[in-house]
Length: 477
Ligand SMILES: Cc1cc2nc3c(=O)[nH]c(=O)nc-3n(C[C@H](O)[C@H](O)[C@H](O)COP(=O)(O)OP(=O)(O)OC[C@H]3O[C@@H](n4cnc5c(N)ncnc54)[C@H](O)[C@@H]3O)c2cc1C
Image (tube, rainbow, N blue to C red; front, side):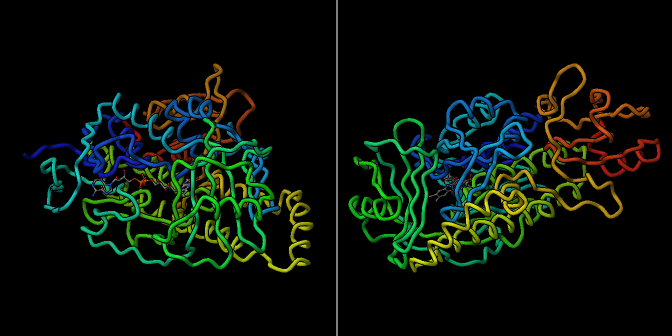
């Protein structure tokens, strides 16, 4: 059996679901192939959704519903006592949202199905052939799927990456991390309870439904993933690191895992692209993996849709790797720094006391932690801009208020470019045009569908606009 589509997406994790939904919303015929037969059989890994991801979901009308399903943490601790004050971020979502990954996946799947994505479960991709005009994706159990492009969103052990011959260099960074979902008899005071000391590190995170995620590692423990974990071993760790095990009981599952730091050398090979964990993986410290994957998908979706529909050429598709590969590398660096900070926590009493006294003081100086807040939340992500362009070019656009009371992120749900004018006369353009309220903006902005600034001008003359039209032909209908 051979089935045709415009794009085949492999992997119905968060990355694949968002990408497939975006493509279908833009009018592209998408098949989403998923090895698992059962949607519910996916154990949750992630629980932190950062501000930029919530903005991405807001531009799809999903953020407020997701926020309603979780708990918000405006301050998070890293390295035990160093605090990041996310409430200082200038965004509609000045916090990290604590909610299990299955809530994110359920919303994205509902949207993808409503947009017309064909989800095929029990479809294990086993072979992939690139032809001059198409890709053939062969599954065990669900036939062969042909499309103009295929995107591997099939996770860290990506078959698509392997079959395409893209290298995934890196190394193992931390072993023997214990992970369990438990019930507690006492409710911890903080949204996220975390600490590290000479014995190890531990965190407790609420899922909001009575279950808590416990994560921790005994310092120096190098046991392999298949070494059994006893609930009592985890309870002792919580007592020694957090000061209490909060009456931990009834783990629904418990396991030991190791973490790698790896990145694909390329995100594109001909008609095949990679996104999410298939393209980059790092330790869960900082909670950036799913967030980075969702943002990959948001960058790729509108570009691939424009190319498939003949409204843009290959350079636009190539810009996906140019923009997102450095962001993936940065996620590896940030999570690596947090991991090493936690693993190398001072062992001696005096050094620990010095750290515990100094870090809360450091946290109060916003310039010291502001960078960390912007990096972790994703709010600070900007893409490389062409030489000589306006300083705002390629930066994230905030959720501007528009004349008439609408928010920019609500308008972006239409999936098109938006020209936001600032009171100066602007020549005719083909873009959807909206005005900012008088005096609220000093620059006219052309906003991409992924809420980054395509082009900006303080004085939007006809010549300046022609530059924008040349660079973004995709924006014209
Ligand atoms: C303990 C832990 C905690 C974490 N916490 C966070 C956090 O708080 N915040 C955060 O942002 N990230 C976190 N992460 C990382 C996050 O879980 C991943 O980054 C995220 O799941 C990646 O999503 P994805 O869609 O790219 O890949 P995946 O979620 O791995 O999905 C890939 C999909 O592809 C399917 N698939 C695989 N091979 C094939 C094939 N051959 N054919 C068809 N289908 C296939 C799989 O069945 C799967 O459904 C954590 C990870 C761990 C381990």
